[in-house]
Length: 255
Length: 279
Image 1 (cartoon, each protein chain N blue to C red):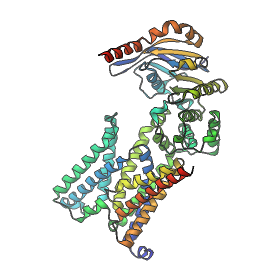
Image 2 (cartoon, rainbow over the protein chains, first blue to last red):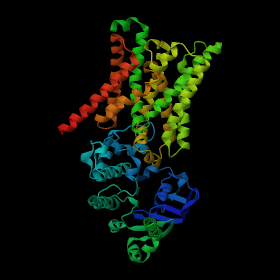
Image 3 (tube, helix red, strand yellow):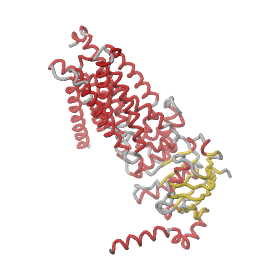
Image 4 (cartoon, rainbow over the protein chains, first blue to last red):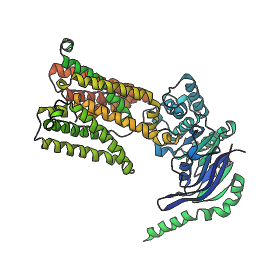
């Protein structure tokens, strides 16, 4: 099996705070990996390093077998961020325009959209079930619908790897399940490798193939069923950091 | 008025320059507004003022510079201010908007010092503050024409990248787009357009041409392309309508242009309300 992502002895710190320490992780083609961990466990930092948004400090990252600093084929990687962070809901852009913007890098500088690109845009809107909304302004849609549009934007350049950072933040509960089912279809039918940071491991565990538990160190990385078995025993020690914080708050309240 | 335009060169200069500015300012304004950088135009126009004051001052003391078009020095200062804003936005990563008041007050401060050093200027300076149609020279027109071609060309060629950067900067960077260089080109163009616009509407009103037509268009536009087209139409209508009205009724052109764009904005807001009520 070909490794899509290979992370070796990766450490990262923000000034003095070590957020990732000695991470070794590899993702194989066709996998659907969920990265779970408490707040501040370095999940988003790990994604940002893989996406090249943060500079590598220590360790190595290989993408499609190539060292990240030399990697050029960024159009092979689609990215869906936590929507709440990164866009202005009043932005006057149609769903179609947003999805078409996913082709920017693939088309390259000084080139224009052509008819075949328009077909690609419509096809990826169709894949996420949003084709009928193509002429609506993005701000008029619900959180879940917007997130589908962002997946379509990531899909339009036909990536082999899709990276999602807590994609269900802002998606209402009843739509989360349908959302994960759509990801499942992309993973199985289109053979797209998925890496997703998530909080709701409960909902997603029957869809993902692998789970990685991160809290500065990589505590567990393996198949989903192995994760289910160890879950009961180890989860409390894994989340120990959060439990302590809760007690701390409680003490403050009592004072 | 048509007769007047055919006969008087200053009227030709004013109308043609106005038409160009009416395209340029809203065109770049759309990208500025959606990136929530509306005040950047204000900051840069005040830096431009410092440049113009510096030019008028130098003209007094350095014989070789007599007759130098103050527009050039205004542009140099404006571009310098733009670069400085970018630098400051990097320094204050968590307070990016802080760069704007720093540059704005710095620009005014410097301008006031230059003015006081020259012990006050003649009415020339006043015309830069509020715009003076009769002051537009043929050279100004040519300079602005060159800037217009550069801006339109850059926006057409970099449209995809500018759209993505404005919509979602993080995603743009993650997909490997040369965000820094493109933003750099953009901010230089903004600086040049601001310096160029001040002949028509004046330093104090330049930012209105970049923001008001856009504010009106994003109320009603479906999609980004439409927002751009509507902004340019509204901008052009304000400039041409304002200049004509000013000519017939003898009003200050800069102010008339701005008030017309305010009127268009109000109409757009009402139009949207009617649409929403109907639906």
